[in-house]
Amino acid sequence: MLLVAIFVMFFSILTLGIFAYIAGTTNDLFQQIDFTIENRTFQGTYNETLGVGINAIQDNADIWGMCLLFGMVLLMIVCSFTFSSNKKLLLIIDFVILIIIFIIGGIFQYTYNEFIHSSTEFLDVYSNDLEKSSTFILTLPFIIPVVWLIMMIITYGRFKKKDFEESTSNIQGVGF
Image (cartoon, rainbow, N blue to C red):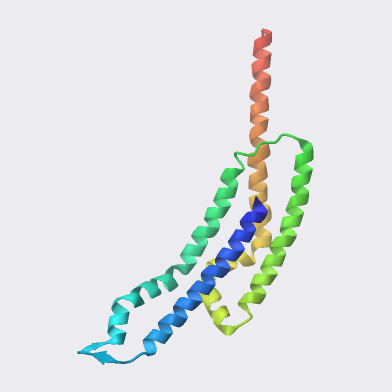
């Protein structure tokens, strides 16, 4: 589950950054067009219509990215309520999965960093338009253990309470 969420987070932020780059390039291209039809300039019409939407995309790309990232983290935590396990062996397997996912998170961090620095335009988009989302992806190896710890506390901790309730109900049934 955590691995799938990391893949989705990584590729969604890359896609959002490419979309912001395309929007910025389109905006720059349309700003350079200069002609007039019946006392109406193209730039004036563009700035009042499509330019407003493109500027909104560029201005809010980081907010959309952070909502997407935190939404996925929240989804993973909520999903941990549905998974149940009280076996000690599964806890050991979860630690092994954590190590593997931590390594994959480091690979994603390195790949993302290389992608951002592959061109000055991408560096500009990802460091200005997607600043917080990029920081989130670049600190992924530190975020993964925290999210994993929360998920494991919820997954394994809630069954301790159930076992306690079952054991107290068995004691009450005996006649104490």
